[in-house]
Image: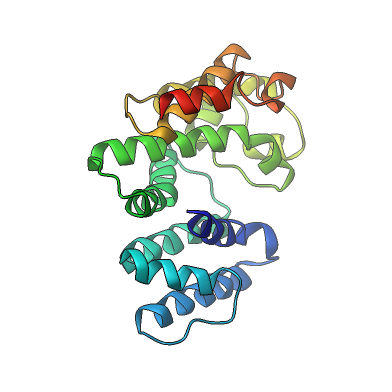
Length: 225
């Protein structure tokens, strides 16, 4: 599982480590080629993530399609475009996280319905995107729905300049409500803690309370599992 999340980290940080779209596409293609070589039965590239990844792909017979889906989803980050709607933001959360959760469950040897997997992954990703809004704004990135920003009489450029965060409350509330799920999977339980924390902060993403983990998070996760 550590290897899977290391792989996901490597591709998810692409937008942060490149200065232009072309370089990002080259980086993602490198990973695409590395994955292809593993499935073609070639010796894995000498890399701290690729080599152990090749081992677990063989050990757990993990499908190539899920890795390809994760790589394809990360191309959206390079476009520097906001999701047009809340539904678009949910699609992004789904595409960038559901394949990873499926791989994780395969390694754990656990079964779950497609509906529960998608709901848990989407909820967890939406909670993460909300928690990262301030950091993303400093990187001149925004994943909040464009139509909801306009309705709140603000835009991504104001956020990039560190302004008008107080106008985000209705936008944040809409995303929190959309992220709630009854999925029994652990990522959904963790997402629920983060979402509740945002609610208690009155949807203020600048609240100092959001810099701390949810109360008794480890114990609550242990109990939920």
